[in-house]
Length: 362
Image (cartoon, rainbow, N blue to C red; front, side):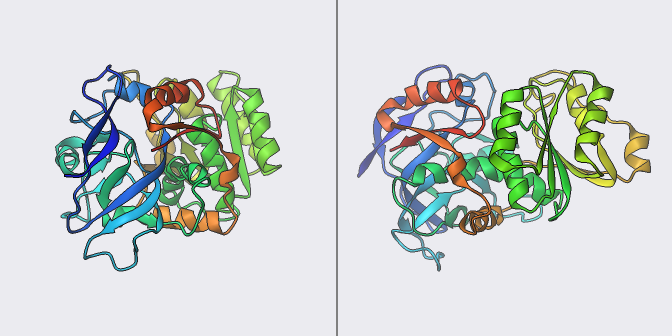
């Protein structure tokens, strides 16, 4: 039996243990990847200590996705080759119900009983020298260097808002508002919207330094709005900043935010506009989001709940990067080796701002 080094979570609240564990064994419909770099979520400490109450069967090797090179392929892989540089997509879907698949985020969490069953097999994540994935979750990215692998980990962050914009059918030339624009995923949403051709991105927030940085990075298509805390006044300020109808709103606010802040942003959308909900309002036990039924009905508002992204999203996003429309160079990365994984988790929690990324290089 061959062994590899991995970081193992044995109980919530305990440090990750660096251990030698059996290498993954290849099965039909699977690929094994040598992990070169993997991001550490800014809230990974809250997952590991149980604060977020994520569904994880223990013990487990955590880590959602990453960048690596194909080590072994199964008989159903016709395009992949050993040695290919790939993105490991953590969004694992059951294969026996295409219309409504169960989902597990490999190495992070699972949704419902079906997702937990899926996690029993596609269990271990990327905080290891190797990982096993479903064939369809291994996406070729083309030739890169080992040093570039760290920045390519940003795909995992950028894919989340990209999924929201795909669901809301964001079109080139439209005006979009990103609710939560000063956060980690929200700032990624600003860059993705611009890469998809948005003419204007309204970016509300309270942190004027981050708002100014967004304008400095991406130019005048970004319209910052300093929120004052009054729902009606903030809504009108966001509308004025747009200088025209807002076609699409993406909410990606964290669980700690008041529903009134989210509602203020959502209700800026024009009649026949689209809203994508990807945030965490109400998930921590607080008040949920209330929206007026007459406003939704009479204005023909489309509201999409979105978790993650469709199966083809990663390949489409990689194409945007390769075309030069989406710049991974915006991300400042700090790397740790696998032996210092606990330090990496602490660093990610303390440095979780926009365009900052902590990575582990197994």
